[in-house]
Length: 517
Image (cartoon, rainbow, N blue to C red; front, side, top):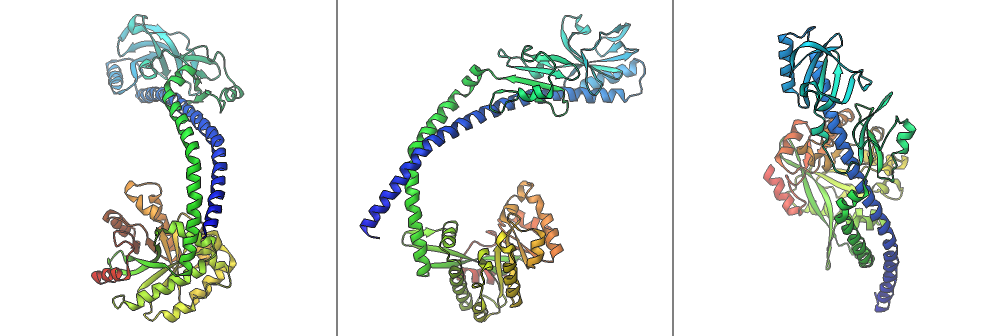
């Protein structure tokens, strides 16, 4: 590249970076504003959910307590019944008093014992959908009506709930807990936020997405709801430091955008040049990662991996692979990779005959009639290697032309493997059509095995799929003995990963093979 061309590229990249920088100032401002609002909104919703969850814990505890007592056979308030009530109260977390009713009158309680005269109770404030009677902030007999509490009655028993210690108090009451059933009733918080029964339309209207005013209702006790109208002063005090930080990040991002964009454009152009030159001058080389028979521990094959390094340093596969695709040099790259690997493996006397050798191919190449002429590989296969062609799951291999090419290559003795199985495009119908020989379980499934994640729990299902298709499984990314033992327990045949060997030279591979014989 001449100095004049370098100057032109420099000017063009600089102008592009300036334009991107100007756009980023507006975009980052809008983005950070939205992020800040969503963050505050999420914090407020979490706060509201915590209040509702606490209320649900109290109600659920009371529900289980009353259900247990009502299941007992007591029809009167004898010593046995009273003793059982006291034991139940001791086990409960949020119930602080239990009473027993006969003929709709309170005849005994855990604190007062058996009453000399039954006490009639006032009409409840409301009934829930579960037919529980609720009294809110009602005077309590055990304190001579000098204290109030929330009482719930189900069947023959009632329970005084410890609501205050769960909901707590706040100088800024910007929320209201209320019952919104057949009738409305204020339960706690600010009593003036909601003052009447709300229809679903009213509920939706008070839950604006771009507002800090919203209503949440409990999932189990659906008529118990919380109206929140966040106090702006409190929110500002709470998030002032974050707001300053976001503004600082916005300004720094805008200032750095020009530099980052400019460097990226220059690096991208340099990358294109280096990859193109490397393809022309055959500077790519191969490394080999062994895969083993998990039951015997023997190295029975390897995957051929391409690498690149020139005078400026290495370029990694996640960088040069997209460049090869962009330059439409995938087939030339594949032929060069296979040729070098076959020469390396044939020339090393310690690589045994019948060794499995796996090559990665681009799915797109299977759609072109002019490509995939791999007869030259058969001519080079003097050690009768079992040649495996790996294809990443991709919609391009679902075409009729791809299926035709795969069938043709299989008739010549090539084996096929679906790489990164479980995270790509393939479905069962496609797998049956392709008639592959191996499925390679993506490393993400194996790496999550120790955490018992949902992803790792899918491995047995993959084993079932493989059994149904009559194909072998190769687990990628095996890094420790715990993963190995679990995979062996699942009857997975082969494994590949750093536990058995990193990508290595052909001589190192030969040494690894000999050590496992």
